[in-house]
Image (cartoon, rainbow, N blue to C red):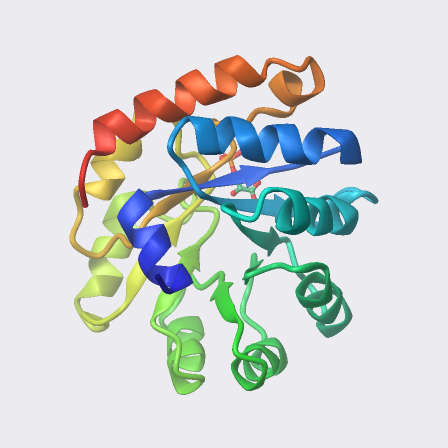
Length: 209
Ligand code: 3PG
């Protein structure tokens, strides 16, 4: 299955920040046990690239991507570590071209018509919408859906267990992203069973898409 289809089917892309490499595989396994086989590891910690490498090697059923990828150098490093998709908080034409040339899915953050046009020029129509809550949320995306009916959004920033189904119900939503399934505190306290439970509940609520 293509990565974008996998995101669409599951409905949720957990945004995961890891401070210890040792937590990488248990976190991936906790998500897998809850029925979710896609995750984004943010490049916000020194161990993030090694964490991606370990997940790619030791939890091969997991489709792991890299998030907070801000530069071409980071994009190359993430791809080399085994990331199957790249997430950026904003749009960079250089990064989009690199990902296209290297066959890697890119989810760039676009919240204005101008950014969406730039992304479409690079052949992209599945776009991150960040920070969703403060950029108008569902109303903002609904308004952009008018001129851009072919665009599908992956909103992140302020999505949680209470509101994610509202987002998923909208026709212009591809999937949602967020940190609520895998909070840093649970990972660091080794509460992997809770991550599994929360994931399972979310997957049951989403059902078949
Ligand atoms: C992020 O980049 O941190 C994501 O948008 C997650 O946001 P959240 O913590 O509000 O889910």
